[in-house]
Length: 337
Image (cartoon, rainbow, N blue to C red; front, side, top):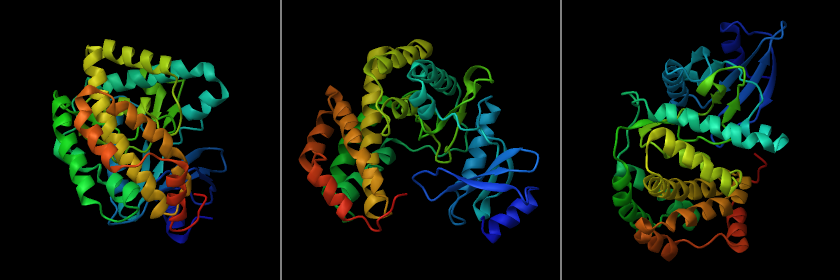
């Protein structure tokens, strides 16, 4: 049953007495409940940590931006951001990853629809009120790789500094052109298939509260280098070609951009997944680390990243079974979350 604060929110939003069933959450502290009222109407209540966490307010702001672009972000029916609560449109259960698992023939058309959405975003300027990190800031965001994956929660300043110092020039080389709205967590478990809608609106978007104004291609590498599922090489190449053709970006330039942005993302994710185990008690994220490492090594093979490759190989151990078991053994609180 929802707690008293959530119940009061549901009463205020006209959903008192609705049946509530939990939905899968994400890596953050947010929870979701699917509501079904006596008529069969459905909605989702998002429960985030309250103030000073501002993710609910950010979610509502980004949802408004996306919907103004004609894209499918959930309608926000009612919100109490200071309480970390929002009542959202229910997009249903056709998560891309689940649809593809049931019918692998859907993989290419669903990914093509996702690419078309990213092309739409690439053709629009980013909203002025989004955070706009520069290359140095994005480079420093790789610090979790040193602190959590290497240090298991202990500072490793030399490694963190080398990662940032070698990555920042590479990022500056690809961060040209106007910034676009970057979802930041654009992957097959955050996308919902809405086939009754048209064009890019067929892709329902979730978990975009951390969106920022960033380089075109940031979300593309998030989609193609998914930490949670393997994408066949021929599908990856087809999607890169589709994006390059639609945006007019030469394929070698796109490959360069994806390698650099992918290195930044995967270094950060490596540390975040280690933190989710060691600090947050979520050991299942350790199982994803070998895939993230594989993506990182692929990115670092690009000639423009030789200095970063040297820094990474000098400091970070490969995720051998022994390394992964060490992370699991340091898990703060055993959990199945």
